[in-house]
Structure formats: structure tokens, C-alpha cells
Image (cartoon, rainbow, N blue to C red; front, side):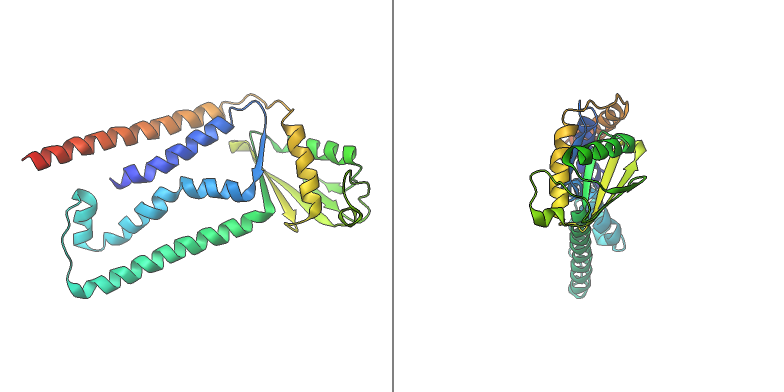
Length: 238
């Protein structure tokens, strides 16, 4: 039962990644939404597998997770298990909130590679009249980065650092901005997103593999649910 609860959100997440990586163009989204997707993908483990592993320390809870057989524990043990459950979920919620807060400075780009993004960033800056100092995947914007098209005098005077990092295996590129709320970020990423929507993505087998794995896990879940329904009907019919 735990495996079914664990694999369902992971299967949905893999299917979503598969569709994104089979798109015709790279896709730019905020780091917060990227983090929400990842948290959803592992939510089966966080919400079910983690507590189940913790509860296996108790025999009565093992019977519940295996057969949904409820056996009321002694009154003296309830307070300990309630405290452990509260502490666990507090750690999960707090960790997720901290992770999403740190994601504010990031922007995720799917179905792309670092070379394409770095080249597009440079072309975007040239078109907008911005002249950052470039070193590999690092872009430093300073007061000398003049001529922001459509930007105010205040925006032209902003300083910011952009770092381009990539995960080639997953065709995923991350833009890391410092500071996260820099006005230059909004200006540059708006134009970058427009350019990427007109740029054809390279062919890749990754999307197909992710879709296949997602459908496999989802099929396993559906087959497992069907098997459990038949098993419980058989048990209640006896």
C-alpha cells in the first residue's frame, strides 16, 4: 500500500517532465513553481513513506499499514506517537517552506542546454543595449550596463549577478540571480522568455524515456489498487 501512495505523485511528476521535454521550444518558469513540482513529486515519500517507516517501530502500526487493521494502542503511548507525528510534519513543512524561499532567486528552463541559454542571454543583452561582464556562465550587471530598453533610470543603475548552471542529463538549466528581486531580472527574463518561445529545441530521447517511466509507474499504481480492491473484497466476503 505504501508503495502505491509513494509512486503516484512521482509518476505524475515524471509524466509532466516528459511532456515538457518533448516540447518544441524551451520553457522558462520561476524557481518557486519548479520547487513546487519537485516537492509534489516526492510528496508520496514525505507524507506516507516517511511516517510509515517511523511507525514500523510499533507492532500495531505495522498491522495497520499492511492490512488496515486497527488495534488501539495503550493509552500511555498515544502522547509519544502524537508528538513524533507533529515533529515529523513540522520538519517537513518547515523544510519545504525554506526550500521554496531559497528558490525565489532561481529561474528554471526546461528542454534546453547551457550553451543555448548563455548564447540567448548574450543576444538578449545586446539587443537591449545591456553590457554585462561575462565570464563563462557568469554575468555581472553594473551601473555601466546602460540602455535598458523600456526601463527607468533607476532600473538602469541596478547591479545584479546572473549565474547560469545546467544539469545536462535532465536538459535543465537554472538561472541564479543575486539579488532575487533585481528589476533587471524581470526585464531580461521577459525578453529571454520571448526569444526561447521562438527557438526550436534540440531533439532528445529524454522526454520519451520520462513519459515511459511515468506511464509504467502509473500502470503499477492502477494495477496495485485493483489488486487491493479485489483482496479486500475477498477478505470481507469471508
